[in-house]
Image (cartoon, rainbow, N blue to C red; front, side, top):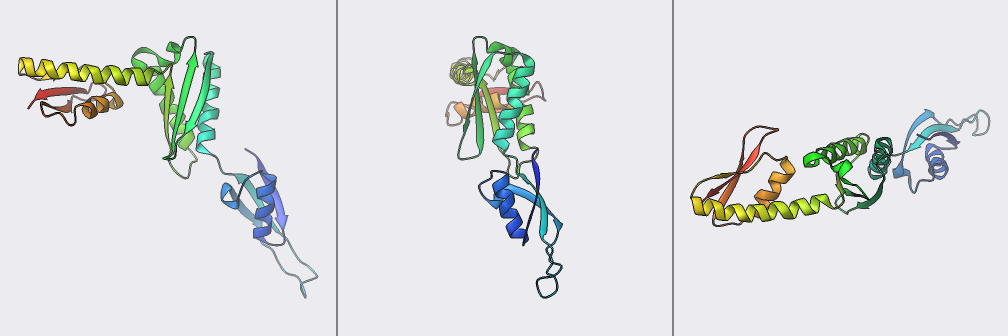
Amino acid sequence: MNIVKVSGKTIEEAAASAVTELDAKTKDDIDYKVIEEPKKGFLGLIGNRSAVIEAQRKLDPAEEADRFLRAVIEDMGVPVRVSQEVTRDRKVIFQLNGEDPGIVIGRHAKTLDSLQYLVQLAANRYADKHITVTIDAGNYRQRRRETLKQLAENLVSKAERTGGKVMLEPMPPQERKIIHAALLRSKRVKTYSDGTEPRRYVVIAPI
């Protein structure tokens, strides 16, 4: 992390110099601490002392997420390309694409979910405002979302046909949310989650 020590007649002047040296846009993009307060000498001439500060650029969560993700992927030795999108509502979405994205997806996306969790921790470690990180590989999450929606619709028919509850296999929270959302407005069934983590599951029951 680049830390600079700069001086100026006033703290504001020193901060402005730090913004330039750190290639930041405004003073809001840096953190600094005052090492020496400015002091006016005798008659404003003799014994004057400049303000001295130590400053560094504030960490950008999206940049930290990108740096951490690329470092982990390099350590894993997985040949994938990383692309990033930052949305207006402070969501950072990474897409990983390559010949074999299954390596970073893992069984039931456990590797992908773990990677996403670690990257989010790294991104928010020093962040002033929390950001949400989503990582997808080979468009897995979108395909999985469509599969779960179709599964939900199919199981509605089963619940109605049998007149009983239909229990799905245990799923992570984000996948259970997809099922609940898909059937939220259904007038034929209701859904709820049961069980305890990590084997919590969705129940579809006729109304």
